[in-house]
Length: 277
Image (cartoon, rainbow, N blue to C red; front, side, top):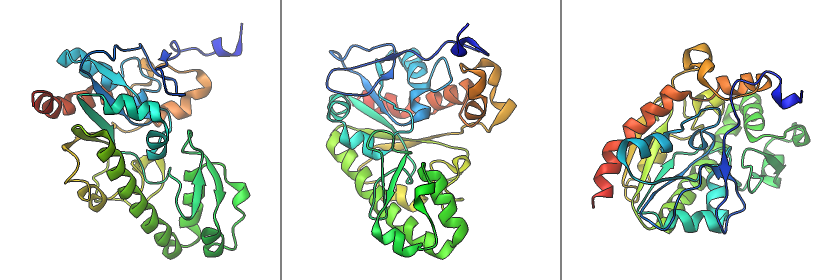
């Protein structure tokens, strides 16, 4: 018996590839020769640990071809830097973009991995000057690093957050502009955009994104749907998920099948409206 078989709860998510992109997306592979809806986002859009992520559920409920281009831990930089991904999304009749957090992007203070945007690569000189007491070699992930920054000094952290907000707005506007067609934003979160927008922890995702940042996109985005993640732990239906026993802590932090169903339902009015235009 292999390690992967120990504690198995379900099968691993099916993945597929599309020409021009180096990423492996959630399967099954869809036909790009007809009109379709493209879905951009991170781990939730990919549908980690669930059998039917919300793009698949939306396809079932609307009859429209839905192409899941979500990538685990993706931020804005993944979308902008993968030409194949942008080409496929740009060819869609409309696009649903899960609102990403503002932590996982390169900026004047630090750089992130180009494909695994949650990975912290290095602190730049402005951040080292701002926090001379910290050893940045201790950090491997952006979230861990930002929690430490805020814990050491909230005033200095506010300067980092301000820069992240400005970069986030600029890159979101760039993504939406490059896509060309209607772009629907999905706020997949239990928090309201005006609350806890200075908290980098996972439970406040999309972390560090405020209502003001979203309002800066109102002239370029077609609209925004909101859906709750549904909390954590046993209340999200762990028994229905697909994960290995060792992955239980990670599974608890992600939305379950009921939350994905709610997200699909929340998107239907806007998708129906803009598909018909």
